[in-house]
Every structure is written in structure tokens, then in C-alpha cells.
Length: 392
Image 1 (tube, rainbow, N blue to C red):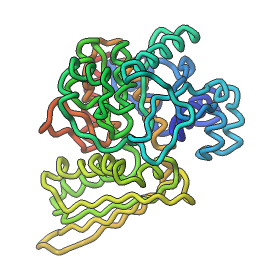
Image 2 (image 1 turned 180 degrees about the horizontal axis):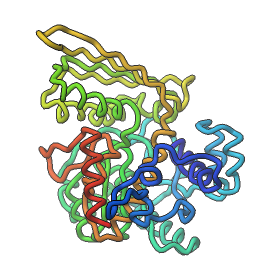
Image 3 (image 1 turned 45 degrees about the vertical axis):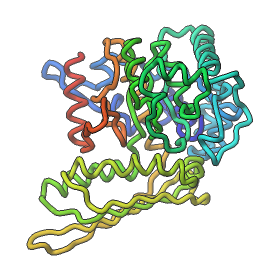
């Protein structure tokens, strides 16, 4: 529960108090047409109010979200102090963590167990206690944790039976994020993967989601540079301008940047970020992505893009983009939106991969290898709105 999560919790409290607006939120500010009338999404769907949300979660450090928000310095201290009561009430639970999977971090507040299955059962117990203490009817689980080392699907991921055997045998091909996902899906709790990790993107998890009739979605929040790519690329495409190359680099100094400074975690992110252009353009230009850890920048990420493309008669041109953005500020409304929509989907009887929510993700999950998801943000938005109209 780091920069993004503390921003989410403090932000929801600030919005509830009328201190700040819910800018960036699809559910709170966008409208859809219902019976010829434009209506806010939250009202059209009767979504859960921010005021009815209760937050909890796990971290590798024993800390309140008030202190985390102060430490991360995403939000101004004055704003954090105005929601001190709400953020101080949320204290982390010990995490399932192994530094082998996130090599740049060390955990001081970590669960111990005889195997992965034991740890999953501890997570389920945490959830049961959380629901009982807060008198909750429903839950949603969101992974806002770090990017894990690059992993590919293996035999242990092929079926629920093989995965559960792997959990009991402490398979190294099972990562901590998968333990949380297993616990959530086992309990019928919708799971949202906000990182590029493998986590729920394999047959065993799809089988479990089907078995428990539970929605899943992901992966990797589409917030900064990739959001801009999926806005610009469709414009170049419809004008029939030939993209020759797209060079992207980033600097950021938060914990995400620290984690991605490790090549094994960066590869996971790189695969996610490289996936977008081909499906939009219809061909693969030369595409390079780098991320640089630069502590002075903190959570205020900067993304540079250089796009080389050819116009009429083959004459070359260039487009330069310098995006000075705030990583957690862009991600927080997506977390809140998907939480509400995942809960809504569960109540409507939806299960498995929720493709209509791909609008929120950088590398949308597909049912089987070879399937190509929609990356064009405008097409994704149409799919989202059209689906919601059928669910009202």
C-alpha cells in the first residue's frame, strides 16, 4: 500500500468532504445516455458511493495510510492533514512477500507459513476478519503492489489442480501476487491486476474465476506515456501517416522506479508497454521503451516520446512529446473506477475476464495466447459505454 493506494484512500476522503474534485474519474464525471437522457455513470448504474467504501490491505511495512501519504509526498501536507482521521484509520496487514520476486525491496512486515497454500489461507482469514470487523457485504481486491520479475506460463499454471499442488510444494514459478489472487478468487472476490505481473493471466486462474463465478481484469494501469500513445497512434493511423519508429523514455523516482531499476522487473513492464502500437497501427514500427530511476523526481514522472513518421510522397516528419505527469494522481481514479465497476459486474453475474474494462489497462488480458486486444483508447471507450448500456 504505497503511493497509489495512499493517494486513493486520501483522495476518496477528500472528495467525500468536498475538499477536492474527482477529476480523472470515469464513474464520477462521465455520462451515458439512458432513455434519451444524459446521466452520470455512477447514477445510471447505482454504483456504490465513495462514502460507503472501506479500505484495507497488506504491505511489507507496518504503517498507516496517513504516514504513507506523508512519506510518499504525492499530496500536499495540508490536504493529507485534512483527511488524517480517515487515513490514520487504515493500517496495513503483514504481506505475502519474497524478495526473490521484487529484488529491489526488503520486507520487514511479512507473513510466515509452511508453503504458499498456508499463506493463501492466512490472506483469506485476513479478509474474513476485515469483513466482519467492518460489517461488509462485499469486497474487491486490487493489486497495486510492485512489478515482479518476469515470469512465463509453465506447467504449474496450466490447471487449478496443478496450481494448487504447486502452492503446497512451494513452487518457485508461483509469485506472491498469485497468492493474493488465488485467495480472492477462492472467496468469490473480484480481482483487479494493476501491474504487468502474470498473476491472473493463465489457465488455472481463469478456471478458478469460472468455478467461483468471479470477475477478473487487468493488467497494468494505463496512465502516463502509454495513455498518450493510445491517443496519438489512432490519429496517425486514420490520417494514413506511416510510423517508422517510436522511441519512449521515462524518468521517475518513486518506489515503482526503484523496483523497475532491476532488469528482471523492468522486462515485465517492458513487455506490457511494447504491446500497444501494433494492434492500433496494423503493423509493427521500430519501438523502444526505457525507464530510468531518478530519485529527485519522486512520484512526478516525466515521459519523452520521439515519433518518426512519413507523410505525403514519403517525406519524413517528427513529433516530440514531453509529458510531465504525476504517476499516482493519474492512477488513483482508475483504481476507484475499476473497484466500483468490478463490484457492479459481480452483482450483475459477470465472471472471468472483463474485456469491457480494458479501457483502464495498458496490456489488456486475453482469454488465450494469440488473441489481440483492443488498445485504441477511443475504441476501448466505445466498448465500455456500449457494455454498460446493456447492463442498466
